[in-house]
Amino acid sequence: MRRTATTANAILGLLALRREWPVYELTQQLRRNMRFFWPRAESRIYQEAKSLVAKGLASAEKSERGGRVRTTYAITTEGRRALASWLAQSPRGTALECEPILRVLLAELGEPEQLRVALDQIRRDAHDVLDAGRIVAPEYLEGRAPFQDQVHVRALIFDFLSHYALMLLEWADRAETAIEDWPRLPVAERDELALETIRRDFGLFPEPCGRDSRGRSGPGSPASRPPPTARTVR
Image 1 (tube, rainbow, N blue to C red):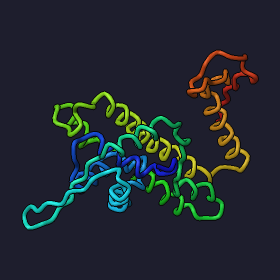
Image 2: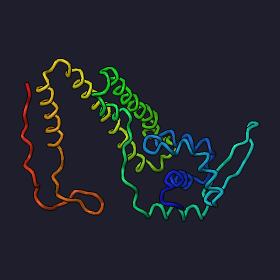
Image 3: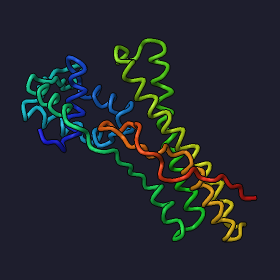
Image 4: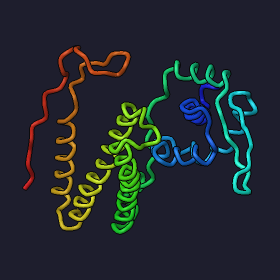
């Protein structure tokens, strides 16, 4: 299977987690959490599932229930080999795609209200993640989640998405405060506050000590820059 076929491999991975999957249950699982970090999978699940069957990587069985025909998919031995091959490769890098942030980047070309609309969209996106978490968390805590046997793995995903959503909300609040201050501030003071934001965030960076092949910080050469000096604008 091509290295670029990540969506197909994502679906293969889900198929490998259970003996068989009705297609609607696959879709439900994608909507629970995968849509937040690999949204392409949800929109292409039917197309990809059929493609996997055509390639011999999955099997499909049709049955009738309540007068409706449903298709159940399962991974094949060849599919497991393809999945194992994909997992053995290094993943592609993390990418961020966010139109509201693009709108903020072009703030000088728009109106303040348009910026607020962009920030509100970021808040909605964050609450979508948290709303899903409000469903998933009690299921795991009460021992009734569909993947309760994989709680040690699912907890890591829950932790990532929870912190991501909370970060979005916190950033949107900070950004809105800054935007509301722009009209009343002299340009020099506005820009100095902006520089203070950069100083503050830059001060949180870990020292450039180098990273190992797994991207983890490790011992290395001393920092090439002095720590930033805290300044407060009044």
